[in-house]
Length: 485
Ligand code: NAD
Image 1 (cartoon, rainbow, N blue to C red):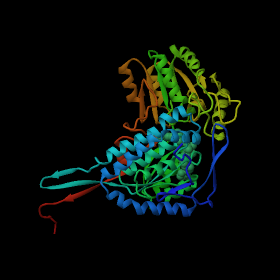
Image 2: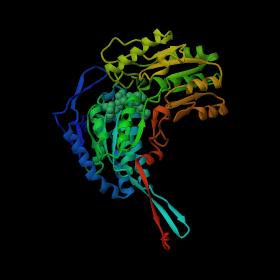
Image 3: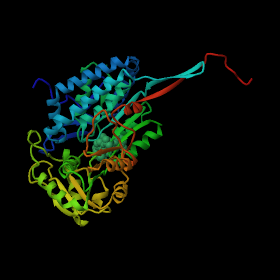
Image 4: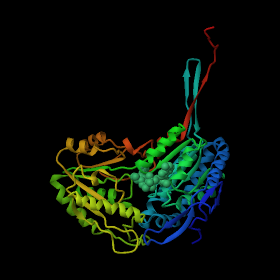
């Protein structure tokens, strides 16, 4: 292997790796075995200060470059990420436990997509000219300044890229704090960006728990905060950012509905439900974990689903044949298993799985509950594990009301062959990302984000530009100025 896979220190600041062993230890655990693969240190106040100072120092010159110049660097980073996809995917698998079969097509690759897309867009960012008779106004699209990104643990490379790429394209500097559970991959993203020509100080990565995130969010020199995390963390971070009237993007949790009508292609619907519940061992924010299946086809759906789950290859995530890996941590495994107990206790029928696997690492079976009702805890709370709840329904109005009866609004899906119904249902969903006869696609070209408690703002697509830049209006008068006295 010609490329050094593991990052060389805890933090990446001002274009280089930095260590400060005075910070609290962060153990990085390989979820497939439970073994420690790295020990990092949380950022001390001195490290946070270094990162903020470097970012503020570097940002004005970056903003003064042309969009084409900035974009070229991002596109070069995309190429490097694609060239190194194998090593980056292995690192992502070691960080998260997700199977290489997934990481090799969904993580560094989608990060590279973001670098390429926003790199391409950078040169096209403009203001507009508004003629007012002889006078006019023009708008300038300006960067926000210093953006802080805070990541969840499930997609460490992708989340870092989804935040850094639009921020940098718009002329901002970025400080990214990965989740303390999966801290390794973002360091490689920063390293690659600098190798691609990004000037020092523009993409910094600092490690730590919530306190480090809080210190960044509350620093007056920070202009914007983009968080990917749970709703409770979102409330805290949003409130702290509000104190300083900072811009925010909140990508939070969900408990999304997936509706399967009686005329659906059942095999496709089963595939959608599998993608929407068991990819990444169920640790995906947009998962359709409340699967409403029409009463007429419920048993056929369950039968085919269980037959398909028998084909899951559970094992070593670095083995390319493995299609279902461990949970990210002992803690997350325990949370998911506690919901299995709750579901059984509430009277749901365990149709598949439900048990921890007898092997090292944090493995549990893909799990399906049938006969779930709306009031059960497993139908209301985000589990963030491989636990699907199947609920019955009879008619469209009834299922729409039930699907929308949640604090969350991240995603929603519908399987039906009736196109008019499909679009009507999509229009009625209270969710930011909706799927018709598919589930969980997230291409960089399309906006991604939540309604209701699932979030504020959008990532990806041109929409993200609005959240990483601001407009300045400049009024220009050609004739005399009239004043009252
Ligand atoms: P989490 O909310 O526990 O932590 C998220 C991040 O916030 C971590 O980096 C953590 O250190 C940091 N943090 C915690 N408290 C903080 C504070 N007070 N101030 C600043 N930062 C703080 O989430 P998690 O367990 O890492 O991830 C799972 C959650 O993320 C799920 O709810 C999932 O749905 C959500 N998620 C959402 C999306 C999306 O795009 N909408 C994507 C992935 C995950």
